Length: 259
Image (cartoon, rainbow, N blue to C red):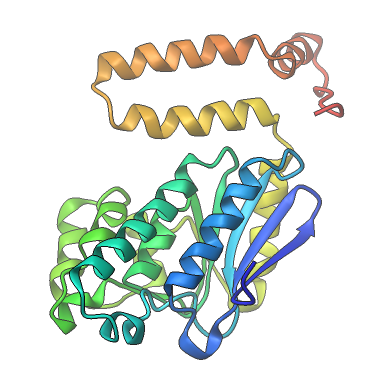
């Protein structure tokens, strides 16, 4: 793994990936994207990991693509490969069996804002700010628009994309980009509390549910209900679901200690 990406285990069942390039505001260079993609591939096969956190060192979450790298390679093939690499990594987040939480402080701009939008959940500090500001430099943030438009209303997303303006953390929460806004000093602890809640749930239900959630969003209603019904039937065959239902009938807490 690159020195630009740290892997930590702050809590049993929780893996934290820390963007570690603070001098460049954690720019998503080709190397950073590769490190993230490889780490996520490994985590997908790690049965001990129940929740993933993507955090960042320094004052910023991520300023997006590395503009110096992009400017130094003015070739269509390079740009095509770079954006394909980024899109592949972003999609891997949603395809991961484990839920992924963005822990955001400072700025999250362009592809950095896209990274927040592609995580399953996001918790931001009160000082966090978000923008898709490529338009200010002659580049419409096309790839970030995919995640952004799936988090907030179209006109809200389009306003950000066309103006390049920043929104603050509370506005990001109101628009659906983040789940919680907390004081900066409480950010890491709030994220770990959220991780602990999710990690305490049965793994099969979380895994099946996450996959179903994103698949059905791309379907018509009839197909979505068909897939949802099949998923619930499979889920019901899991021992954890059987134990959960029996515990409800017995008026006791379920015993998932073997999960």
